[in-house]
Image 1 (cartoon, rainbow, N blue to C red):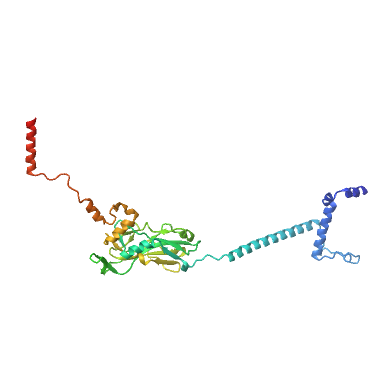
Image 2 (cartoon, helix red, strand yellow):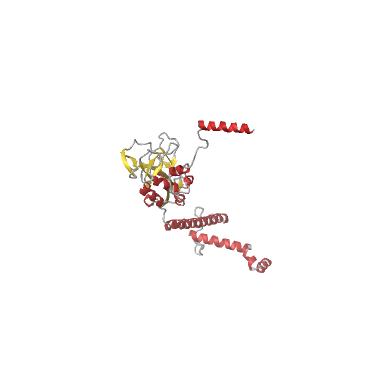
Length: 347
């Protein structure tokens, strides 16, 4: 017995910390702390000879090492779960606080703004009286409608569409001696409604705001039976293009063959300088010159005299043209016979 005690004393401090005595002692301390927390009386008074021993029905009866280890494990698990929930709550609090600190994205349609691109060119045409060619097969507009949109909700989904509506219920004709458009009567019967939905739809507000929205592929036609999706218009009428911003949840009635839906989720824009008169051939020579001069696809009509109209340039090109063979007369035949006789004599 003395040898065992001597060997225990000879152990180092680190080895003693992992010895059986140390482990049993720490276990007894945990057990005593648990009893203290459970309200058991472990004082000397409670263990006095006059004190009653706990009975079989007493909660303190039957406590052993195994039960204490399970309860200890359970308490450790509860503490770990409690810490985990606290850390999760703290994370959620941080998340909620960060979401509160950041302003929520705006979804109000009132803040949306649309700016017309190439407004100076449109105004120059408008001052003269803009004309747009319409054909059976469809003709693109020049200038084309191009806009820049701001104020959209970056995370919301939108459709961008365009339609062209009559300015009034009148039909017009061009008076050449005064170079003006005059009212010629009432408008023709309404044409089937057509809406051009931008091919990039459906897209987020961030996508729309990072680009110039162009309607350069839109075509105008006077074919009321058109099945190509072109905008159907009457010739010699005045029209106004409109750009529509349509939120996704208001697009259930959006269709190329139906009027644009209305509501809080739809906002429309128009520009006075984009009003035009539809024609099958340009009436104002100034419009012809301006379109040839500014339209990059009309360079085939340009020549050295940039101020001349297309008809004048064609007439000047053929001014010195002569037929390669003129009509033969009786004198020509007589001369040819004399020449042949001369050639035969010489031979």
